[in-house]
Image (cartoon, rainbow, N blue to C red; front, side, top):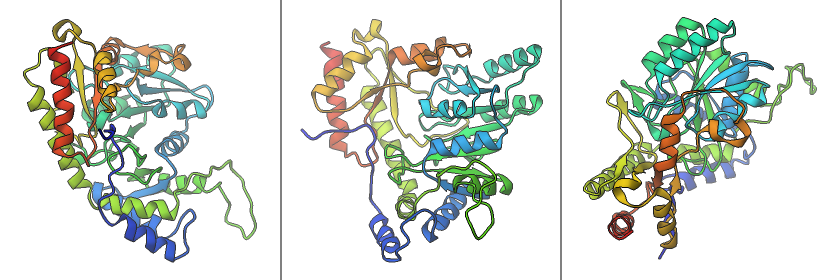
Length: 376
């Protein structure tokens, strides 16, 4: 049987045409007309004023932290239920992450725990320099209370929307909240440039500064002169062309993943002990990945039992994110809460969700899951 991947690239539009256009122009390095057009297209699609196309979402987050003034010895609050790329750039700046647990209702950052941590920081006389809030598995965090409390304490918010392009919160698109937003176009995301990311903001100065830093901070001089430390973070013209072709079909990809999510929910609704990631009432997710939890007491199997049996059938699945506060590299970092995400990690599993999946592929996954849960 063919291999079913978790979220493989889905090239179904004008990618080849636009890449060939970039190739024939001989403009294949960083910057170029496709990069400019891709930035413009993203701004138009999500309703933001300015964007800088970069080599990765990690690069975008690193620059966002630098532009927020994060420096050696600072603390930065961060969602604990996320991929390491949300926390690693904090350390690039010489700062320390402080992790905030999720709530069970959305799996995203718990605004009440965030407020508790900010109150504690104020009492100690050291407020965090910034907050990185993650839009998890394609669903936006609850931004109204998060932005309100961070505004009260004067803490800038960076929206890590790497997993959530096309998702909305109360009618506004992911990435448009806070001071800056981060997008990712890694190969497993809902649209891809094979590798790439973008920093977006309504603040022109932030984006101009990001572009400057991302091109080795070269001063305006006829020779190579540098007054600041810079980075090689800009996206190539070739990859931007792919991104433009992908973006044209984003709505179709979201619709397909939504249908996959619905198929899984309906097909597995009668199996005791299997639940799905809650869909928050305040917005619309992009259904990047369909995620389940497996209660071993009810289902008589564990998430790892299911993962291993799916793998034997050449089907990729994967545990939910291991919380950052459980990672060996961050074990000395402070965490507010933790029990919710620890339980989600212990019981959770991501199912194949690529927008190129056929109904027969989905049925294959469901049939195996039903068999596993009926005959553990």
